[in-house]
Image (cartoon, rainbow, N blue to C red; front, side, top):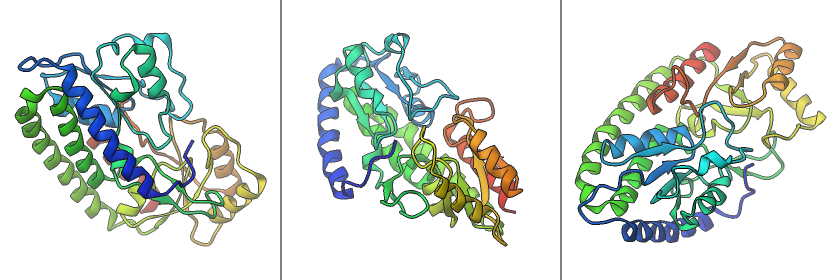
Length: 304
């Protein structure tokens, strides 16, 4: 579930404290000159892919949430603890997306100080009120904006360098190549977005505000504003109005979430339901770049 707005400044202040604490704990946990193999993990695939590509063969990075699962209501299993006992860092999104990371770290004996939430450091944006909910909400899916993803790579480098100081030059070199790849991706999607003749979208849940803002789209509505909760009849009426307009918004579903409601909306409005995967990790989305290209491809099919 997304948290209601406590103020962006609150997140930024807490983020500075969090970075200092995590890096200090990470540095204290490693032996100088020895690669800290087996000592990192990530809650969701986009963070995992970025972290393991920075880490290379110097660190083992483990993905906690298997592809295809919904991070919003995930309940960690006993087997998820296995392999995390020695985790020097657990990269998490934060901002309400993966709160289970804290309890998982405690169960593994890693401690809450080792959970490194990147979301608060990525200049969180507010999902506007209205169709979404009466009050604004903070969207945690920052990685759908490749510009922010490049910033996340820099933060990951600093975190891993705190865990394994002798590896810092290695991590910086790999991060430089990764940032170049993500920048090329961003330029490709920017060019691609210029041919989208429609600009309004209705997403299943609030996962594409960053992508939409970066590439000039408008999120006209969200089918399920609070993951796992049924929307009101009034909310559904508003969505149908958007989908039945003279220039209707494009409707999207997501593979991690139950699509029955979106299917019903598409049928009642007489529109096509387009699948989009903002998390990835499965076939065809085995890298961060492929996740973003998949989103852009879904927009091609819906907006051209």
